[in-house]
Image 1 (cartoon, helix red, strand yellow):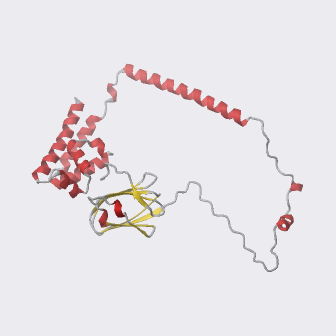
Image 2 (spheres, helix red, strand yellow):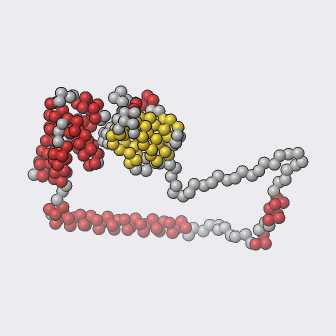
Image 3 (tube, one colour):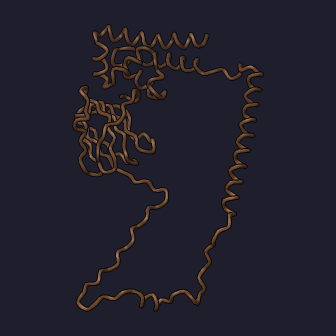
Length: 274
């Protein structure tokens, strides 16, 4: 019964959006262009296929923007979506006891299996570490070269030759340190933007107004999705970055920018404003 209510509410959301769009005389492609979204995203919204749009926060953002664009009530659609999401959650209190006991038995069996595997791995490591082999012994103090001997062993330059100073060893990176890159964005017109770094952190997301600037720092490569790429100027660590032929016919772009500023095409995604 809850599944039927869930499907009805989601279907109702899509029907209202589609009816409002048609009332304004907009085609699906025209609505997608106005929202700077992929046509498949608009189609998923009208079909109530919210699972294809990603996380809950992105679904709510798309619903609000679409409702405002076609004159629908964002608050009512958000409420319908909240009720459908609540109905989709399973009622764990209604799980039969036999099924719960079967799950507990499965967990016990899995724990026992993991214990056996762990013992086997530990035994293999112990056997490898105890194999007979030649061990290194510290050099006696009287056999260690003195500072004078080390200096004498250093080759001297012949007369008239140029002695090159010893090159310093490169400084090692701090353990755990991740290189960071700075990305500057300048908007000459409104554009939908979504940017994340190699560690999966969302650095920027949303509709940015004309005349705005943003400066972000993250671990390259950076995944950059632009809804209106010609209106956005990019600079990585002060150097200009151009998407060039990677801009689509509808003006959007899915870019992957590495630490050197090289731009490549990123795999398109349905969610997050793509």
